[in-house]
Each structure stands twice: as C-alpha cells, then as structure tokens.
Length: 96
Image (cartoon, rainbow, N blue to C red):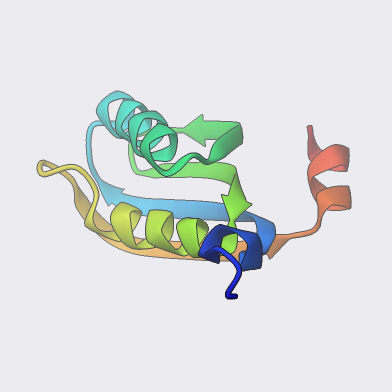
C-alpha cells in the first residue's frame, strides 16, 4: 500500500526576498494570508517600499508553491525579482 503524499514531503525553511513596486502593507498581509492557506509558518518578515524579506517553514513542495505565488503577488503588485534561499534551522535560530 502506498503512503499518503504528505508523509513523503520534507520539511524545510526558505528565506524569500521580493523586490518590485507594490503597497508593502498590502503585500505583507497577502503573504500572511497565503501562508495560512498553504499551512506555512512565517518566522520573520521585514518590509519597505520596494522589498519584502521573510522566512517561511513547512513542506518543501508548499514552500515552492509559496515562491511561485509570491512571484505573481497580489493583483496590484509589480514583482520585478524574487530570490529564494534554503535556510538551515541553525541559521534561523541565530538570526532571530
């Protein structure tokens, strides 16, 4: 018998940096909403007028989905660049 897909998924953490032209508060709220839909945990988030950087933890496939969603962003956002970096748990602990 095959195992459920969720048992085969690896847990991971990524730092995602988004740059472009957007309402930083609206994009921040969108990130929190989208991460809740995907079941991801946001451990840190910083934002300004042209960039947002956050760390998200969860199943690796769902983190990839979050990265793709962020590249599209909310309908009124113009995402110019997105950069995702895999993080080790130790890096997160030392940066908080």
